[in-house]
Length: 374
Ligand code: CMC
Image (cartoon, rainbow, N blue to C red; front, top):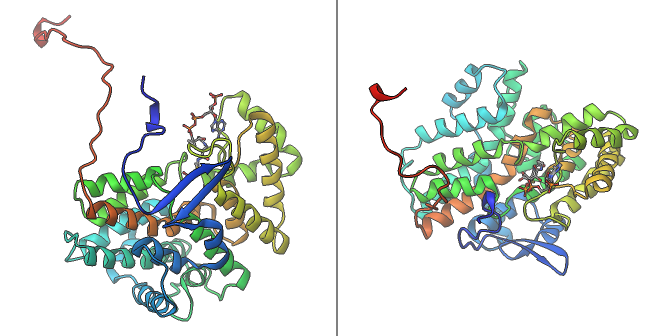
């Protein structure tokens, strides 16, 4: 018998991300650096550099990388036209993957997969993701575009473009940390999708579109938006246990709980996000965190499940003033660094990913011409 969902299958070798459970504690490292150290000391651009190049940058390398990203933030007018013409009810993740495809059509090196060209494409995508999301949001809500501002780093610039005002230090640090925590996670479904596409030697845009489409599902990045729906539905902490009980009785999933890899151990990203959610709750609106805590307690009591990375992200984003349907996009703003690093790694040491299926259908059937069938 095979385990469904490729559970525990080692599908490739990678130098990018280590997830291991050691003595009951989950270890998560990007290129050998512990996620808690990165969360404490790093910034998103430094982590993106680390994922792409394999080493931490020097001070001058980081400054240069930040400037390169800042330089690539603006969108070609055709993409702004696309964002304007898409129906305003289009989900921002559908917009993102459509815009990535369109960006590919404008890259004359789209089919070049050399290391140098791939790194250039990766930088461009990392830089442009926030602009696509912020521009589309402002267009669909009838607001003027706020163009990228070179004075701001990556996270600050996104909040500035989205809200049209200088973000607070607390909000900048919170989003920056969130992006670090979402930057990579080994062979999660979207990264695997990206690697499968890259293994056919598809171009980087196509591979990122595959990843973006995969991230959107509610069992993956789509969970954060669903968590927010749940927080709104529960509305007050004291209703959490009843809500969870009823859902479990109906055999429904509680979004933001459970994980394929972290079964009995807390996801290290959740530990960081919980602290962040509490900090924002203390400084801003406490309601969402309080309801989250009540739900987490009830789910653990009634089903023994732990919250995953998407759970506390919801109350963090709500306190950053991010609309619910942009939550998955925020995940993508972080994960694009990991996706592109994995695509490049796949290109560099490629073999087509083509597993087999255990056939369970009928065999050796006798073909009856259509005129002779009853
Ligand atoms: N709510 C209720 N029951 C659950 C949940 C949940 N969220 N997750 C797992 N279970 C139960 C499941 O019903 C099964 O119970 P039983 O043995 O009694 O039948 C048991 O736990 C094992 O579940 P599974 O489906 O075999 O676990 P999996 O490894 O295939 O699924 C998962 C992992 C993340 C898809 C699943 O936990 C889930 O659906 N969670 C809710 C969606 C979610 O939060 N997704 C975000 C995942 S983490 C970040 C990311 O990738 O974006």
